[in-house]
Image (cartoon, rainbow, N blue to C red; front, side, top):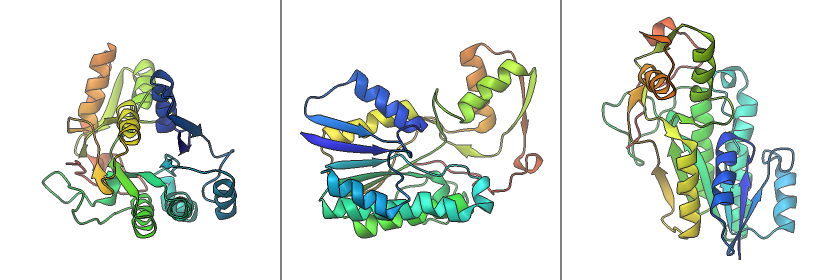
Length: 259
């Protein structure tokens, strides 16, 4: 029986993966879903102790620091969660000959491209969050040869705080919203990403390295908001605005379409 550790189990991707596993049980796979209170992956000694007591075949690292704006003034904790933790997991996976499936982001790119980004394209993060995620990628690839890095973008689901749940709440409260229209990416449903990860594990995928997984449609945040309104029957007036009219602590890539 294959044993699969899933870290960050209470985040939106972790919850979607739990849902998918519950609906698609396998007698040949045992999933261990652990949240931060059960396994703080940013603490080296805790990670070492867990792996000393548990034999793992796959580790799916859904744990992450995702507060993009807060990271600008909280870089230490962002790097602990997004880089140091990956290093600790990669070391333990390498020792057990386990596959590490690590989730990364479109924000490792600077947004200056005019074509969809491919896995081998030059990275150049423009905010602390992106820099911390890129360092995590590098630790995984340098330490554990059996690492699969999945870069994804604009992840949303029915769980937690994300663009979809925020828009659903705001549209139920307001008659009018202003949404940025000049940042372009691919919204990705966390349930689809969970299904893809599950497929990688069950098929025992050995194509190690970096790959991209994103939703099928590229659009702006404004267009995404329009889509959410239409699909859920909201009549909220949605106005397009440029990024310059919605300043944030962290700079975002203007184009982060993953190919």
